[in-house]
Image (cartoon, rainbow, N blue to C red; front, side, top):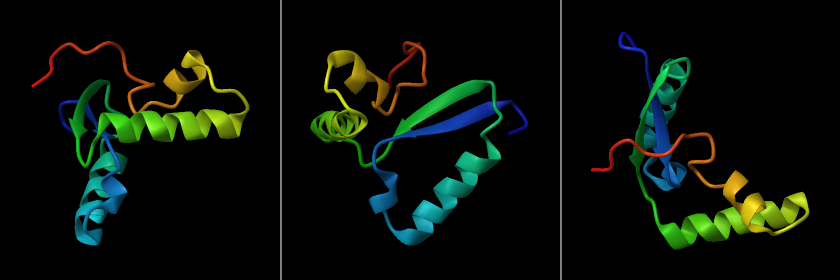
Length: 84
């Protein structure tokens, strides 16, 4: 928070233990106004992400590459600077 970092969770973290979910949601809320983003993958799978994004795109009306892209976990992020 002091360094202006925003935490972004990539993955379905809500399926983790309730106490972990509470800690993560608190951290997400506290860092929401940050100007630099640190994205952390938790309970992440590429196939799961694509299926989720396609389902959301279908619910919104049309399944296209662009529609799926809008529903990816990283839709609000610029291209990666570093992947560890």
